[in-house]
Amino acid sequence: MLSLLHIENIAVIQSADIRFEPGFNVLTGETGAGKSIVIDAIGAVMGERTSRDLIRTGAKSARVSAVFCGLPGLAWFEDNGVGPDENGELLLEREIQGDGRNVCRINGRPLTVAQLKGLGQQLLNIHGQHDGQQLLDPACHLGYLDRFGQLEELLDAYGQSYGALSAIRRQMDELRMDEAEKARRMDTLTYQINELERAQLKEGEDETLAARRDLLRNAGRIMDGVESAYYALIGGENGDGAVSLLMGAEQALHDAGRYSEQTARLAQKAAEVRYAADDLAELVRDLRDSFEFSAGDLDEIESRLDTIYRLRKKYGATVAEMLDYLERCKKEQDEIQYADDTLARLEQQEAKARKEAVTRAKVLSDKRREVALLLQERIQSELSQLDMPKVRFQVDFAEKAGETGLDATGMNEVQFLMSANVGEELKPIHKIASGGELARIMLALKNVLAENDDVTTLVFDEVDTGVSGRAAQKVARKMADVARCKQVLCVTHLPQIAAMADSHFCVEKGEAEGRTFTAVEQLSRERRAEELARLTSGDLMTQAALQGAEEMLVQAEEYRNGQH
Image 1 (cartoon, rainbow, N blue to C red):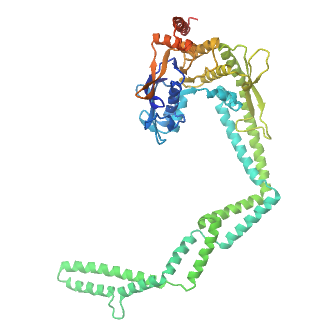
Image 2 (image 1 turned 180 degrees about the horizontal axis):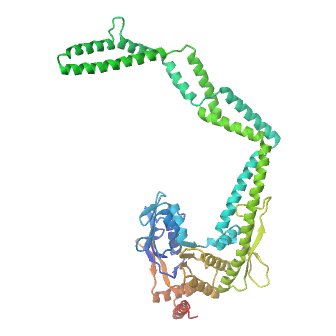
């Protein structure tokens, strides 16, 4: 559960620490006081999308920290090599900086926003007013049904089959073209293949030719240098080159070495230098002799490089890329030439893949229909407890349209239908439900879905919109029931719901030093009665309103304690 939330420089909240309790927690306050900012802060530290606009005016950054305790063993902890500390606590932190960057940590260890979101979705669910719009959208209904039935494994198995089928169909579509298009493409491929094959390209030759061209362009300077070096080493007819001189030095030292050990060692070194000079002279001579080229060599290389340059503009930046393009052209040419044979083979594969996909889609569909009956039963039960006993709820199935009757989700179109009054026919929810009915249907659906996950904390952001009177009392009791097994945080304007809470927080806005600020206070029993009276009667605080508030608190305690 979420035990502590620290907010710093988020919108009008300069600094706030909220210590949530197990069970049912509510937040109340005047409109605009900042209740939803608390929910935004929770969303931020859970990795939800946010922006620099959330930073309090004048601050360089905003920070949110959340401490969780009593968490189940999640696979995320093992996969990411981090988890609760020795006290069983998990600290999540997110800093939103003015330049848009985010710094996220878990127990002091850095992590990405994506990792934070992945973990946040397993720790806490936020149900806001926008969820009602999702309930109105039939495109979301199939996802709700699959979540309730925990059909992920069947959906994944079908997804693999459908993916294989789609890949085969894409290949077939690429091969199917009209005869005129096929002829045009074959002409293009034939021209390109012939042009590249005539060039007789060899991998790496462009680099070799460029090096040879540079050599030939500077051949005169190179030859002059080589000849001068060879003359310096070998000398002319008089033998006055470096090699001859070193040989003389070696001989002189050798003769003197008979009388001095030190001179003998120098003679040995002179011999080593002379051997090296001999080797160098041979290498220079070989290099000189290897310079065999004619005046036309450079022209031939320039012409070849020009050919490669022209081809490069069409087929690739290097000879290797051009050769690769040539192979792709040949492959495509073969595919078109033998398209009928390939299509026949793919048609057989497509029939097999489609049969497998249809089989798995039917298994998934049958399970969905089975699960839909359970969902209907559970939703009806929840709605009855939420003062909507006459409402009928049904999951309507239709087959997928189109030639194949399949898509990535299977073979079913699913839509939630309802009838708000006895005798009225079932119709899509968006054509029937009022605001209050929609809020209760969403609450019922969320409660049912929450039964099948490990999330320990549920957050409701003003989902009681349009609910009042007896229905509000039913919603309050439902939330209290949910809070018996999960921690519930709820932003509300309804005194019935606020009275039912185990812990009540008031969000108040004020001014100090010319700035607006928001404070969050956990209310005592006496202050709770005053806040409930305010929610009931507004600023006109009467003794009767206070007595009514006290009665609501007593009745709520009796309900929570099972005295009902």
